[in-house]
Image 1 (cartoon, rainbow, N blue to C red):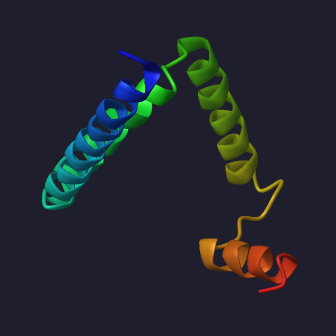
Image 2 (spheres, rainbow, N blue to C red):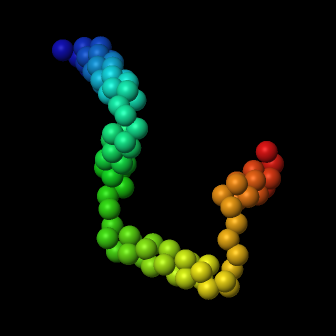
Image 3 (spheres, rainbow, N blue to C red):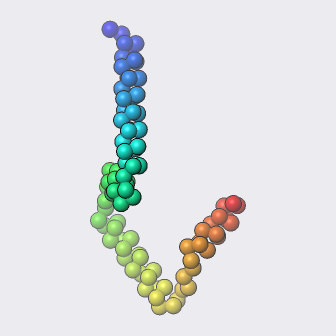
Length: 92
Protein backbone atom coordinates (compact mmCIF):
# COMPACT_ATOMS: atom_id res chain seq x y z
CA UNK A 1 0.00 0.00 0.00
CA UNK A 2 1.29 3.38 -0.97
CA UNK A 3 0.58 6.74 0.64
CA UNK A 4 -2.19 7.38 -1.93
CA UNK A 5 -4.36 4.75 -0.26
CA UNK A 6 -4.51 6.88 2.88
CA UNK A 7 -5.76 10.08 1.24
CA UNK A 8 -9.39 8.95 0.76
CA UNK A 9 -9.47 7.71 4.36
CA UNK A 10 -8.20 11.09 5.56
CA UNK A 11 -10.90 12.87 3.56
CA UNK A 12 -13.57 10.57 4.99
CA UNK A 13 -12.28 11.27 8.50
CA UNK A 14 -12.37 15.03 7.83
CA UNK A 15 -15.95 14.73 6.58
CA UNK A 16 -16.99 12.71 9.64
CA UNK A 17 -15.39 15.24 11.98
CA UNK A 18 -17.06 18.13 10.14
CA UNK A 19 -20.46 16.41 10.29
CA UNK A 20 -20.03 15.73 14.00
CA UNK A 21 -19.00 19.35 14.64
CA UNK A 22 -21.90 20.61 12.55
CA UNK A 23 -24.34 18.36 14.41
CA UNK A 24 -22.92 19.47 17.74
CA UNK A 25 -23.25 23.13 16.82
CA UNK A 26 -26.84 22.62 15.66
CA UNK A 27 -27.75 20.82 18.87
CA UNK A 28 -26.07 23.46 21.03
CA UNK A 29 -27.84 26.26 19.15
CA UNK A 30 -31.19 24.64 19.94
CA UNK A 31 -30.57 24.76 23.70
CA UNK A 32 -32.08 27.42 25.96
CA UNK A 33 -29.85 30.48 26.30
CA UNK A 34 -28.61 29.56 29.79
CA UNK A 35 -27.51 26.12 28.63
CA UNK A 36 -25.88 27.57 25.49
CA UNK A 37 -23.90 29.91 27.73
CA UNK A 38 -22.75 26.95 29.84
CA UNK A 39 -21.67 25.05 26.71
CA UNK A 40 -19.83 28.09 25.34
CA UNK A 41 -18.05 28.72 28.64
CA UNK A 42 -17.04 25.08 28.92
CA UNK A 43 -15.59 25.05 25.42
CA UNK A 44 -13.78 28.36 25.95
CA UNK A 45 -12.21 27.01 29.14
CA UNK A 46 -10.62 24.23 27.10
CA UNK A 47 -8.93 26.90 24.98
CA UNK A 48 -7.86 29.12 27.86
CA UNK A 49 -7.43 27.24 31.09
CA UNK A 50 -8.20 29.28 34.22
CA UNK A 51 -5.30 31.03 35.90
CA UNK A 52 -6.19 31.84 39.54
CA UNK A 53 -3.32 34.34 39.84
CA UNK A 54 -4.45 36.20 36.73
CA UNK A 55 -8.06 36.11 37.93
CA UNK A 56 -6.99 37.67 41.24
CA UNK A 57 -5.11 40.44 39.40
CA UNK A 58 -8.14 41.23 37.22
CA UNK A 59 -10.42 41.24 40.28
CA UNK A 60 -8.07 43.64 42.08
CA UNK A 61 -7.92 45.94 39.04
CA UNK A 62 -11.74 45.93 38.89
CA UNK A 63 -11.98 46.75 42.63
CA UNK A 64 -9.54 49.64 42.21
CA UNK A 65 -11.42 51.04 39.21
CA UNK A 66 -14.73 50.77 41.04
CA UNK A 67 -13.27 52.58 44.07
CA UNK A 68 -11.99 55.40 41.87
CA UNK A 69 -15.37 55.66 40.15
CA UNK A 70 -17.27 55.70 43.45
CA UNK A 71 -14.93 58.30 44.90
CA UNK A 72 -15.88 60.71 42.13
CA UNK A 73 -12.31 61.04 40.82
CA UNK A 74 -13.56 59.94 37.41
CA UNK A 75 -16.95 60.14 35.74
CA UNK A 76 -18.47 57.05 34.21
CA UNK A 77 -19.87 57.02 30.70
CA UNK A 78 -22.61 54.84 29.28
CA UNK A 79 -21.90 51.76 27.23
CA UNK A 80 -23.73 53.45 24.38
CA UNK A 81 -21.24 56.33 24.46
CA UNK A 82 -18.29 53.92 24.63
CA UNK A 83 -19.47 52.12 21.50
CA UNK A 84 -20.26 55.39 19.70
CA UNK A 85 -16.70 56.58 20.32
CA UNK A 86 -15.25 53.25 19.26
CA UNK A 87 -17.23 53.22 16.00
CA UNK A 88 -16.20 56.80 15.32
CA UNK A 89 -12.51 55.92 15.79
CA UNK A 90 -12.93 52.92 13.50
CA UNK A 91 -14.50 55.17 10.88
CA UNK A 92 -17.89 53.49 10.87
